[in-house]
Length: 64
Image (cartoon, rainbow, N blue to C red; front, side, top):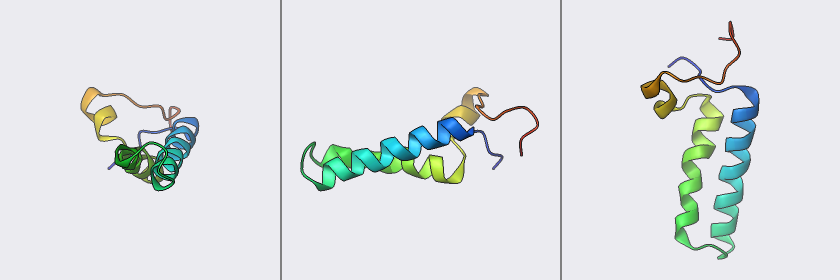
């Protein structure tokens, strides 16, 4: 797996994932908030399978 997420992309995914999971745990948005696990994990591992499928990358050139 080659990293395909840049720093800003990773930070936004991790933040959104934590926010969704937190809201779900608090009972604000219901169980669908646990979908936040997906952006959280992709942000933590710096790899998005959908980016890979479509040949996209938010990494700067020459990184990793």
